[in-house]
Length: 607
Image (cartoon, rainbow, N blue to C red; front, side):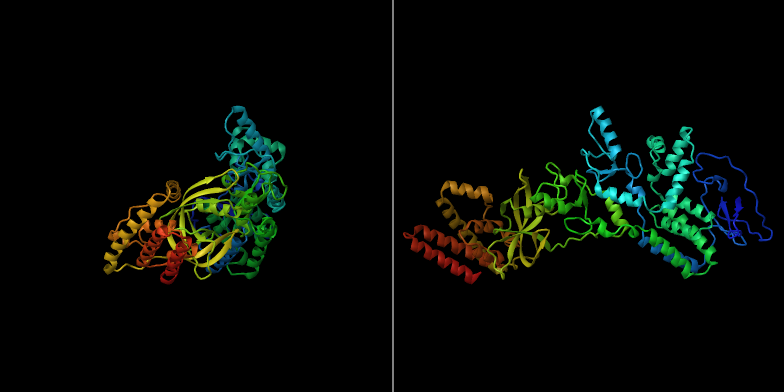
């Protein structure tokens, strides 16, 4: 059944809009075709469009009639499809803001005096206060409609308010269309309210209040409203503007509606160009898309963080209403508690519990200013310059330097929780260190950290850089060369000698010193000589534990750390322990220094 009416204007005298109940139309000659008057339908509250006398209710599909009927499933020639593809590619690069994602979760309108919660949602100040009053009266926990606990909001989000004020000054024609159709509806019964609420996306509970307050200008432009508005433009023979609106719908996230909009766009282009590719038509439509895109009224410079002067990355809004990059405000608070702009104290404000502001993320996406996620390089790790650490040996750290606090937070949030450790007295040509894994973390009141770590593996530092105030390094993991089977008997003998000498040295120490060593580095593992022990990439853990407590300088310990020969390290440990035992028997300080100089000289020559 085809219902059709002819346009009243002379320009569109040959253009007929019809509602198609099925995809196939009967084949008939043009001369035999006579326009039939559509059967009248009862007016209902769901007929939510202006000039209802000019349209039928619930229009879902359009077809355009030249001298003969063409339905929406008719084949459009390749030239028109190619032109539509180019227009849609241009529209995808010149997007308009998805206003539905900017809605207040309470009233479902564009927020008035917007405030942002820790969940990332932006709501009307009035809605937040009403919600808080209701919850306080019930004695329940204050929550955002999304379910997350909210904080006490006292200030308007300055950036969000500025964006919304600019947004409401754009696309004035379609906003006037929304205002006219919204105000023309009757609210006599509950069914009217339900239909209007569904069409405009406005909360039923707030609908009467919004109507009385004349807030129709804050109704977000949905793809459905834009799609229906394109019909209004076509009926007014404003085909180029209609094509522009259809292109916006076709690149929207509403998949069903976008497919319908594309088909209508192709039919409209085919009518305007008589089935031929026309650069002029394409350029005019693309010009309209460009002039109405978000980029035309909002620049990346409007969305720059005042601390780093770059577009926002994970924007966070403080209770005072100012927005910063999450990393920037974290670094600022590490050094100074007040807000950088208004100097209001941020004490007690937990930045780690804040989510990125959805509204600003949406706006950044619409202007193509979202920074791509940086894929972490597994060979680049955070770097702490402090001491010498060894594989398999625990290492406790007190992180009091503020520039390392951000590094610690990032390490804790990632898996695995690795960072590099190198000593302070490093030489340029001997940049070796140990990868540490954070096992436990204690946050102190002043913001400093106590970390419990353990060595994982050794590395050679290839390149050193700085990221957000702390050091990073590109590393190359090193491991021991494979031990030859012929050396296993000698390694077993060395292990027995080291065990005997180390036990003798340990028993000669004061008991309180032994207790401090054990509390700092943990209990030494059993000195064993299994084949699996010698085949480990870094050798047995027990020999690193002994190296840790040997009274050697950092330079000598780094030499041991950089050595890839387990055999040489065991010989060095054995000789060092022998020298220590000899120094214990020495009667003068000169003899002790002589023994120490000899062992250091040997280690430097042989490692």
